[in-house]
Length: 151
Image (cartoon, rainbow, N blue to C red; front, side, top):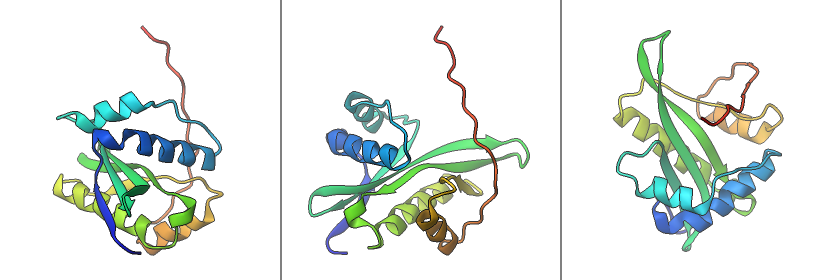
């Protein structure tokens, strides 16, 4: 790993970040509906709904992570949700995922979160090994979603 920086995303990263998001969605056998304008707006917002971090190597984005926050009624505490963590195929197994994960954990701690949660597809054995190495433990659940009608 040479000359790698992990930093907050900025609006100028939108096109490269969109490419990474599309690679991530394809890897997980789905698609993403976000566009470049959405990413630029989120990156420039003063009250962002998410913290987006990028891994940059030699001036090129090679990975990203997105962190949001929620509240757990069961523990009456704030927690962090690692919405995404992705490193492009050519940059994997070089420590970039750990740098992104560590940055997300640091921001979560600084924000007062008591824990961080995330999910990964059950078929993604490499990600499962990575998260277990980082101290994570899994819990089997089904994930549901429903598209809501626009008002």
